[in-house]
Length: 238
Image 1: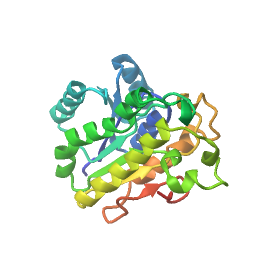
Image 2: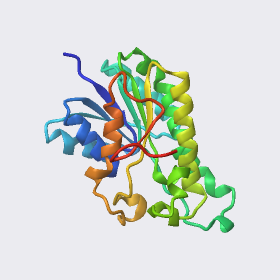
Image 3: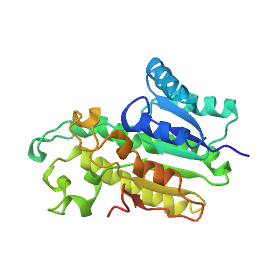
Image 4: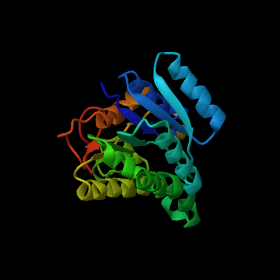
């Protein structure tokens, strides 16, 4: 029996770590990507104690050399790669649109948008060798035009330029990858308003609930949706 192998970026805490835990619980081999080697090692140990095959790998999504080294580690371990979860993300400055200036975008776009592009590009050769390759880009309802323009949604009242636009751009990147690479299943996921460091733990969901959409997208069937936006309870409008 062949084991499914996944890589989750930004996975030493929060939704990323919970995603690792849930995927490992399915019997998968999971690479836990983290910038800090020690934090990554400790996080992997916590899941391994529960019986999961979790392997830490140093990975900074903003650094070409770090990504290349991580690819080398995975290739050297001969695990293959079936699923890439681009989870790493940052919130950025909480400034009003009228007070936002161009430099405010740089760090956030570097992680939230260019990070997934960098990691995806580097790992596509491995994913294409998988009989059922999947990519999940962890987005946000804040990147959805349908959600943020709906007065009934919490996201409607949160106004900002940087983080929402980084996730809207990631959504477009997701659909374009899906068009070019129909042999893979490539989808976005909205965790929902989850209590994590990103929002000062003000979210209303647990990390277990927040990981649900990502895990659904990561486990999609070979003939399942691609170019879709998964939510916890269904699909999210673009």
